[in-house]
Length: 336
Ligand code: CP
Image (cartoon, rainbow, N blue to C red):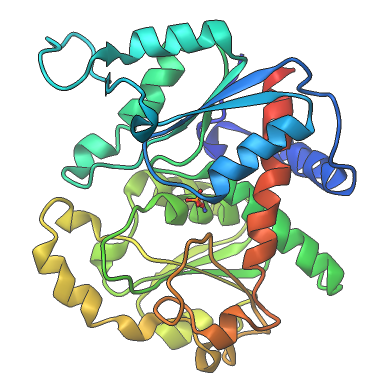
């Protein structure tokens, strides 16, 4: 039995096979690969796309999805082993995962960081606890990485470059740019985007305001390793012109600077000073007709201007649609 916790655990060939299957199901959406199978979708945080696409995807393949969330009446869970449960939690994840495993064929988990202590959040305790105690495959629906988003992103890039006759992803200049947001956000999508771009053979540039916004070393090292294995390079820059020059892909996301985790007040003036990192037409003009995307939800005219988002280079809607197709392929691969 395998879980889908992080794309780093899967080879490029395995991921490519899932993407091929997703493309096939995009053309022929209905099937019976999940006939009489069920998936429990545990959401400890909000969602529009993930919740809808997993539920509909399971049903399109003859399966059934059950959504669980604290606001929907689920018992508060404890994720630490060996604790005296005299706080808010009524149930330990060991019981929750074991019981759900007896009802369901897969468990999806969304559990964002608590944004207090990155050393704790980087342990990805909720996801790992489910993986540890579940007897059925567990899917990461976004914790400190977002592998389903990353798969949808890669598929959207492949499709659009093919449509435009611009060839494969290998060797393309990929820019992951930090953008402003009034709040410090999760690094999950940025971590995943970095790893995906490296795994799929691109030259990767991370553009961020200062060294404090460089991502966790676990993901930087994974991306570095994959870039090296593919004969590519990973570049970090704080210079907008250098990053955008000749870029063929610009992926934008905001995230909080890890050194300020849990002590966000001193980070605010730094992020406020970098509102000009917004993806706009002036920056797009520096690129090699780059495809632009964002995982959504996105604050318009804060992270990306309307002109870019609604323009011909933006593939964010295709990426969002592809969540449905890639997640069906992931579920199929896991229940085999
Ligand atoms: N991109 C993404 O995961 O969207 P939701 O948060 O709406 O699920």
